[in-house]
Image (tube, rainbow, N blue to C red; front, side):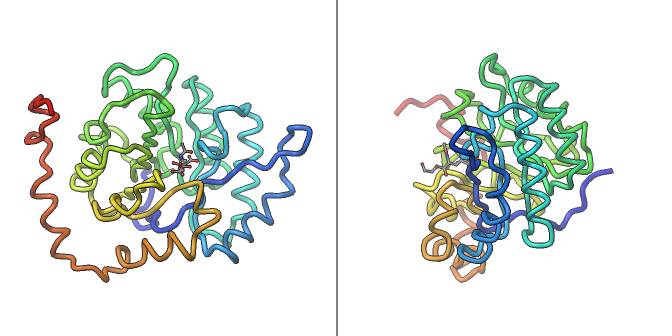
Length: 265
Ligand SMILES: CC(=O)N[C@@H]([C@@H](O)[C@H](O)[C@H](O)CO)[C@@H](O)CC(=O)C(=O)O
């Protein structure tokens, strides 16, 4: 069973922090108020948990499960999308977290590339992603590209090539890289039911112009209405000239680019 097409993650998505007690333990009591704060004071309806901002990679598998369960429970009937990051160095840990995310009703899972033993090829990376996704085929799956943290600089456009056949639950990309040419080529390649989410707040405007469907970021928790909302609104509500957007893809075929042709600048 593959996930239903339709519940597309768009707009503002807060990459949540992980509340801790002064002793360094997970502080689950803060999560309910955090959800209400995002909804009521920031107008945020979707969250991305246990990612970079949430320091998921520094938490134990058990801590990540506790957090994911609490976020899902407190967000139920309030938020539209809870995407749980389940990437780990260990495939088995990622699969365990993916399984758990499915059990607690997460709206999606996201996975980064392993980063100590790095995949040398797109094929190797996709094999890892595929094995995690296969555990929960009914849960929407997102690839999380964050090369500055993983050190894995494989182009996302290459990762997307044919991925819907390999991962039928594939529903999009969380792109936290600075290469807007790669991002634009991903947008051009993607079917309309995928979400192209951009994660570097510093160049969000560029990504929106390239066709991003939403912003996932740490700063979404603080600046939603007055900053992110104002930026996203004209793009997502089609208040800009749509004609311009039909033209950039014409210039995007990856076979034509200087990167592929090996021109140096
Ligand atoms: C490395 C990092 O933390 N990047 C942030 C950005 O929102 C980042 O904080 C922002 O661009 C300011 O530098 C997000 O991409 C992270 C994110 O979405 C996550 O927590 O998974």
